[in-house]
Image (cartoon, rainbow, N blue to C red; front, side, top):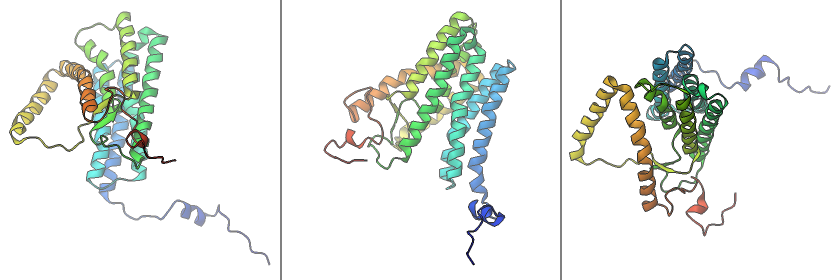
Length: 285
């Protein structure tokens, strides 16, 4: 009598395909994923507030989403709770919070007055944020690391892009009317931020682990306290000034990279490009 192949559609086979069942999951494994879910909720809620013309709340929710999305990975590494599931959730949250949410809030607030041009700018920014995130994920998974990767990003990081692209909204809260002229200027500015996201400009990351001299510790702490105080009392002035300061710092960061690592201020090699550092290596993929 011929043997029959096991039916892959039986409940037992289906359970096995889903992997072993776990009776209990450590709480530390759930915390980073909960933060990621909260970040997605905040980003989507920001879009809702924008639709309801509650723009200040919309901007606050988008910034909260960007903050939460920026720390969930670090918390996961600190708690030794990284997982493939968490990485996929984080990637989903990134495109929503750093791409879709700020673009939609900006479009509803001012870009819609530029009509098709405003929508095109919002689309390009969102796609640029997605490309930036995809490139970062590929670089992170690459086993070959460039010497400067611990200190610099390639292009403006997506969380910073979400913070930067909302500058027209911050300025409007200071009394600048969101008229047609401002809509056109905002569309051009949005395209500029999109270009910075996918550019190869070396941007200092602050992750090098360099130490701070002891005599600088107290001034830095006082500076952080001052920043938090001004942010709570003068939020839109502080955010506007921070955006301008960040943009002005980009050429200096690129110049510092060029002096230490490269031979072109705005031509950082792609991370993982082994030939950029070892031209004599004829490694083939």
